[in-house]
Length: 246
Image 1 (tube, rainbow, N blue to C red):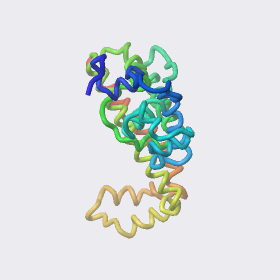
Image 2: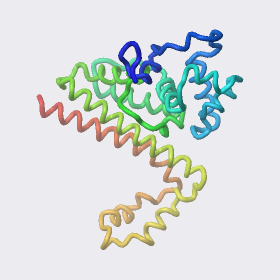
Image 3: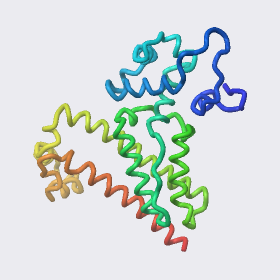
């Protein structure tokens, strides 16, 4: 369904372009109020707690009052996913790598303020005002390079895929770490030494023998380091591509 602007209904909602019913009393709520309350619920109780009824309770309103503005929980999640990002920071100029590094860490910081964000289903490319502001910011970091416009999009979408995947995995790891921290201790190395046959799993066997997993807290020692390492590998690939072009 499209609106009077020719936009899909959900996109019109994200941009504040969807008209509200004219009949009845003047609405006592706004889309901003509903989105803010939904984020408050998710921050305090987790994404699973978010429902139209629970957000209405948070606002002290009836559930039907929300439906005057938001048609479904899916629309509510789309609003939350856009609002949670807020706006991107100013990036350092003149160095695409420094710009994308700053941008990536800012995205991670925003996600960590709202851990539920990584669990929201992705339904398409960025389309809301905040998401597009972040998209523009990352593209701008590449503006001084020799990349074609479609290559810039490919780099940014690849980086978004990396960040989303890493944080989605990190969210699950964090939840399980809180429930069972001993699984992330030296116990893991002992398990691997017991079950990994180096004749069947030779590459993993060499890693286990090297002592990589012999740490007291695998989660805290490795997660941030792994993210930084993987980010540098990704950016190294972009740098190699640029070097080949020149």
